Length: 242
Image (cartoon, rainbow, N blue to C red; front, side):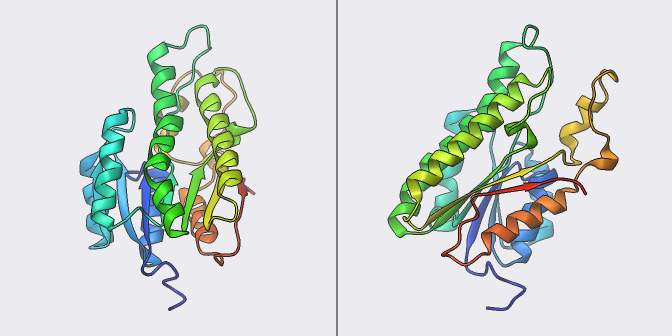
């Protein structure tokens, strides 16, 4: 296998692929030889990315806040890829700040659906096939918020703590089964996720874009963990700006 295409013959599904970490990851995995299924709500952005990537990209528009739609996307991915993806990357996320006493219930629910429930739904759809064939890699994009909290971050942090717990349970349940599980948790990343938040309330002690990681750094971490020898599992990889 050429060194430049370590993922040749393998497939990946990336959620939140229309922008930021997801788009950067999809591009890098495709460049490494993988066939990539792109999942996000913004079909126009997905198709533009797919055009850039080429024939190895599959576009699967989906609103991950809807369980039935997420299940359909999983079924469509199996059909398009011929099986469950070799690599599942749960990256899609919603990030909205408000004090718990003021946070609208629908915002909290939407955050949980996108950041925690959707990754479970996809995992539930693909994991039995991964276990049956004895191979697969589930990569969860976590956050510094999965181990640190700050005021007004009750929804996002709760979802990320939950995602970390789900990853740890998955790792315990799949050890020795040929299925790998990795949590990649970066500090703040310079993506459009911050656009609305940084434009609000200057009183918040939030990082500036100058000290945020580039999405390409997270994508590179994902490529690293997914291209290790099959006998090696990287349980957790945490990234921060130098």
